[in-house]
Length: 129
Image (cartoon, rainbow, N blue to C red):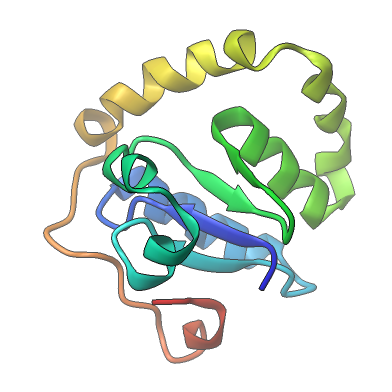
């Protein structure tokens, strides 16, 4: 299995981001799995599942986190996102500074759900448990 986006299933911002990725992924290259789900237990170490403020992306070979995950997702989608990919040469700690600041405040800005997002019937094949 490749191109899995692991996201915080109860985060309002994360769910809006997944909605956007679903719309932009015309080639249906991405699958989605909540960090709180069974698929995450298989791919992510326990500390990564407990640290739900970090997006993770499995590209079929490696797991990527934070801004590296975002850049790899953009590269997978192609199109306009290729413009951002050269940022991969910037050291991750520098790229991740703003990401970490926002991640700590995302519930305050966008809210938190009581339960993980349920995909619509049309989206179901794109989601892993």
